[in-house]
Image (cartoon, rainbow, N blue to C red; front, side, top):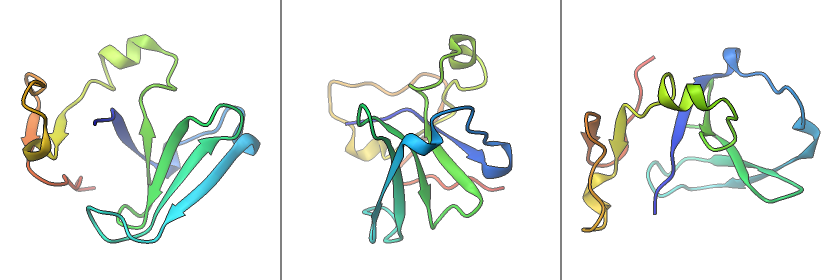
Length: 109
């Protein structure tokens, strides 16, 4: 139904450990853009760790869940945009104080 992600420039992304344990799966045509999206999963537990999309060259789309610094969740990783709001279920309300976007939001570098 939803995921909490953040986009980061690949120049700022460092794998501290576990990169060798990732498995990649690519989708040739994604729903939102029709471009290739590669998903990187943990081979041990199956968790989706991050995605790399052809529509976002030089950036990776990381899940917030694997970040183990909860201070970052409350500060730098606090949501700023909620997208695809037209598909939100009726009982779920928008995130207060963030930009609401119909469809996909594309960051401007």
